[in-house]
Image (cartoon, rainbow, N blue to C red; front, side, top):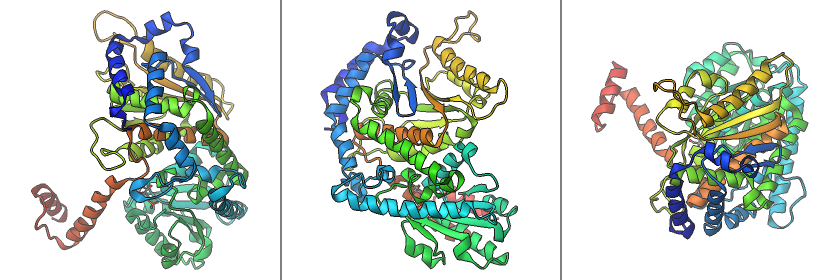
Length: 511
Ligand code: F6P
């Protein structure tokens, strides 16, 4: 049943009205167990939800909403491999990529076998490249899910990475990016990974062609050794002359493809064992999501909190603050995950919705954000739920730094909640500003895998409750089509039939 038709939806609307005077400081004062009841552990992740604008009654109502919208049946359909991506008639099985070999019987046994055959081949190749000392630079050319996941993970796991190889990520069609990377490279010591699920994406194809031209112009001959394609479209890669190829399947969405051949740069950086640990961490979170009761299921609790904030308290964004510099691309990665998955205005059957869906996601690593936009979070007119991420144990031994970092993340969450009364306006902090705190013991391949899978599943939960298809992205198509038309007009100068603004800009660009 659609969420806005359920009894729980109406109950939550009423509950939200009664909730208007809610104050975090009072909530903690009257409930000594609040921090405990609104915290939990999940594989590799401890989560404290207690500084959020909700209470036990809110969570109960949200769980009822999940039941009435069939969340568990929908989740189970995904894990059975049903075609829950209705508009593209596809299964949604990124989770299968981290399923241990031989662990499934029935119709999924065969695709699982293919997953492991490809994984073995990809990891063997990763190890071969790792031990190839002539290759000093690996350039990943891809965009969106074929860039953000591997880039985020290679950065996040830099302390586990092999020394002596540089990883570069080129995504933008803006030639300044590729030219800047190529400037420092030599053909004989560079490996290009052309990462594209479809092998049709304009940016990636343009960059790949330019990289091939550059390679040949530098005297490079052996394309099979210096170029590899990571794609579901092996034929298109072969048409470009790239025969070293690692495939995946249409049931892996681009923004969910880190675990597939798209993760090859990660495997090259951290090795086969490290990549397997990443998969194992994610698999542990898959199992938690599949088996934990709703009340103690972390992706469910986070996804339902997102629904509560968006539809009942009407908060429009969520700010991500990873207090670990290696997680600095996490906000960008999560932006695609949340906003491309759940930025939808129709339900699964194409009917227009009358309620809000994905929030705006944004953020920067801490403590940097504190000296930039945290002013608005503390004293601005909007309430922005924060999501802090912190790691208990550092991997460096520089004195004082980590204690200061952790002191800051705790202090920010505390300051947002407690505020400070002061006469005179400017120095007054209203407090009562909500935040979630995610804590990893250490940032490792396994804990990163669990953290990312947690985020994937929380996006599934809110998308499922909203009744939308979180696995298509039709909204990116119109701009692509119009860009083709305008590209030919930039070349020809033909502005006929264009709207007045676009025509004037075109003429100015060509002048
Ligand atoms: O345009 C959006 C998109 O299709 C994303 O969903 C995807 O991650 C990205 O482009 C890249 O697509 P591909 O891997 O097919 O090049």
